[in-house]
Image 1 (tube, rainbow, N blue to C red):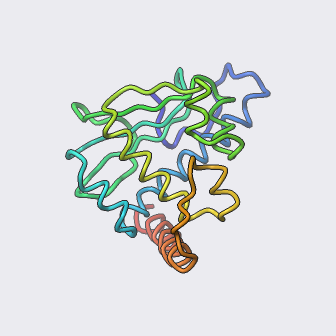
Image 2 (cartoon, one colour):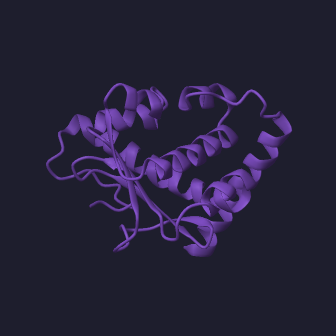
Image 3 (tube, rainbow, N blue to C red):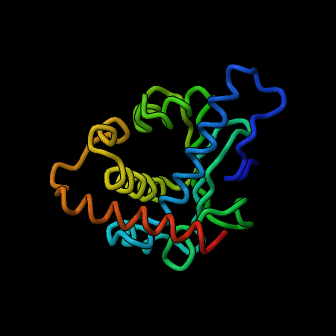
Length: 184
């Protein structure tokens, strides 16, 4: 299983997939760190995470051993981890091919659209999957410009005020930077 820090393309990867592999690995690592920051800052995401069982782990990656984001609930917050902890409840979203992941990671196709197009598989608890998707959607709508967020999520919330988006999004980015320096 790949870790969140796996940015090198596999040795046997066809050269046309190397860039896609690197971009996907970078975006998955960034998403993991942004989700962790958002779970510390945003009360909506904190509410979702607090309702998860202790140690709930999510994997968002590429089959068969491509780059992956692995993130776990820890003390009411999400934390990127290097590997799935033993015995942890797991919900795994996996793209079937690096090209499919690349489309989603570069906002050419939303994650829900990828799933609808049969480009992904899911294994695990559906209720936990929905919590993760709500956290991911909320984070994306807060940190991305509206025009890009509309491409990334299934439905952009019409009641999201500009001030809330700007304030919370800024706090998420500041927490990301803080976390990078504190944990490095």
